Image (cartoon, rainbow over all chains, first blue to last red):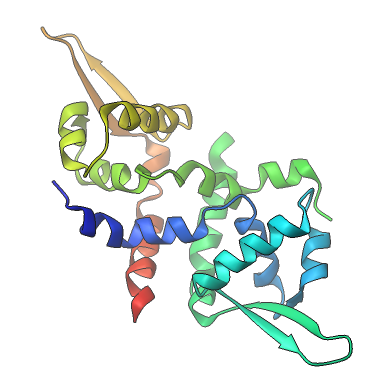
Length: 106
Length: 106
């Protein structure tokens, strides 16, 4: 039997934990398409999600070090989000998952 | 803006939905290691999970067509679980996710 620490530290479990969240796949897809995205732009691209929920998901992703929050001190100040290098490495893996998900019906 | 149907059908979202669930990564890892596993064997390999919760996760995975429930009519009857061909295709992708998850600390 696996002990609880091994379970907690299992790489696959950790990856899936980080990627799981209703809006996270879509946030990732948007961020992969552009170098950096402003909060409001990102929000406009999502269907039916409140700003509050979007912020929460972004905060979790920031806590997991897969996105980075960048403040630009203009007037008014602007907030951008971008992927970290760690997250960029996920790109090819997410492409494969996307394809696998698209093939499910066939 | 993406419409709701596009969102619902997005391959990445569907894949991650199917894989998300507290015990699913571990169930998958166990099933990838062997051709088929009996319920009780699987349960013994998991840390701190009730049989009820394990059954529920297995049922969801069966509904998503990534595992298959096989009944063998011995006395007493035996129930095995095995991966579907669809799920077998996930193998290399899950390996990469596992590695990515393990590299997170470094």
